[in-house]
Amino acid sequence: MSIVRPTSSQMTRRLIVLAAVIFAVVIGQTQVLLQWGQSPAEFAADSDATLKVAGYAFAIWGVIYLWLVVYAVRQALPQTGESLLIHRLGWPSVAALLGIGWWVVAAAFDQEIATIVLIFGSLAVLLIPLLANADAIRALPRGDRDRWMTVWPLAMLAGWLTVAAPVNLITVATGNGWLPEVLSPTVWASLAIAVVAGVALGVTQRLRTLAYGLPIAWGLLGAFVAEQGRNPMLAYVALAAGVTVLVGTIVLSFRLRSGVERTTA
Image (cartoon, rainbow, N blue to C red; front, side):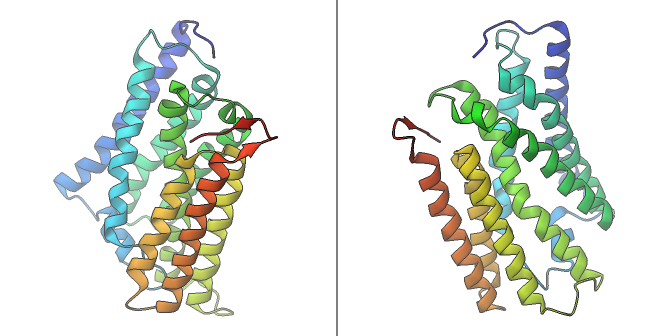
């Protein structure tokens, strides 16, 4: 990886990344402390009759935020070289961070359509560049700092958004009566879970990193816990999907490629 010191324009981009992380973290905490509008949990619970995730599962945001802070602070240090992945993922991460920050604002004021656009947009602007740079990500050595301080925080965020975006969509659709009646709500929720699991395994096949699949497995297991009491069938669909994603993520992340190169977390 390159060890060339960042140029002034690259340093500016890095400082913008830092500012975007601060914005994403602070806006969420500000909403909680000042209690303006709905909290994200209240927004999610407003119309969760079709698909629900246990409240404790959202604690993963603490881990994601912490890792994103590490990602941003490392870039703010001028001695950190301008690597390929720092360069290519910098601006996409800014867009995603701004998106999740503004999602909190949209949820607080019950702007339902805006929450859908923001969460799917944040997922897309992050996941597409990660996939586009899959070869570079897979080639990173086990101890490479870009693996732990660039790929892991961004892949974890993308993984959680992969779960959160469909749940957001189903929540809004349920509350507004938009779910087509051709299928039952349980079937729609089961299809969403199946799509999430399929995406999780497909992306992990490309990236070969635990960071993407683990948050998805965590979210699906959270759905299992939340749905046990009211919809056991859906709960066990979520459990099966969560276990499949967890096992598949581990196998895909550590298996041998071409009989020579071992990919690592």
